[in-house]
Image 1 (cartoon, rainbow, N blue to C red):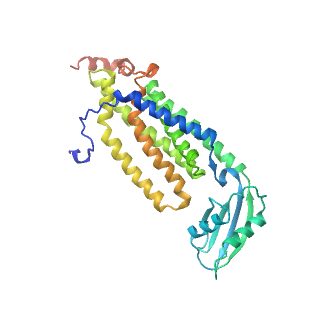
Image 2: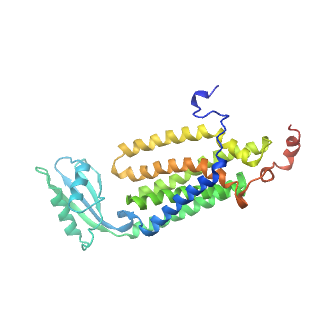
Length: 319
């Protein structure tokens, strides 16, 4: 079956990506340094999951609009409030960070919230208000760090076994670049960093490594079947997988964009991290992953990808 209608780029296209390797790697390095600088100087706008704060439950006689609740709370100094319905549609669970410079007091916070949400004809009744310490957030953040380490080590082991050590190092460097850029965006923009964003960042790692492995698999196949220089083989591999990379990324981006638009405030951070990760991951699999295989100790050769001894006879018979 012909797949030509689905080819955004011709299969035999010959865009010289490797020729641009110094420019593309320089831009990638510059963006990564800006991201690291933003994280080091500005830090993150951590959410309640990491900082601790007050959890307040309210019950209303009639359902209330969650976006209106967030807007009212922001007016009285509680920015980035986490608001969600629970139980019946008349019950709200509100998570708040304490106001800057104000002493943490559950009673005061509950009173502020109740006054701010005193809808005409529909007053809210406080069911409970308690302080949640940051220790929970620290534990979860540490779990996220361990997950990151586990994933990186797993990537290195799998790709080294499936491909070759040079490919594993290049893939991990590319993936870490994508993760750092996504995290740097949140530091630079000041957007709230909560556990859903952390989940989005971890999912970016999976997407990025998958995209890179697809390109590397084609590189391995071409190294064994083509008689050309490594640069030509790498360039041909990128061109042959270009349509697949762009189409897959576009469809994934549309899915996450729908989540960003219609998923509500609680999922917006995760969707934002995934959208940025998809864009950066797509570009890095084209402009970073393969160019890394042309530099220094990562420079790949035919000898690195030669088949095992039992396949050498078949390879020798090829024209």
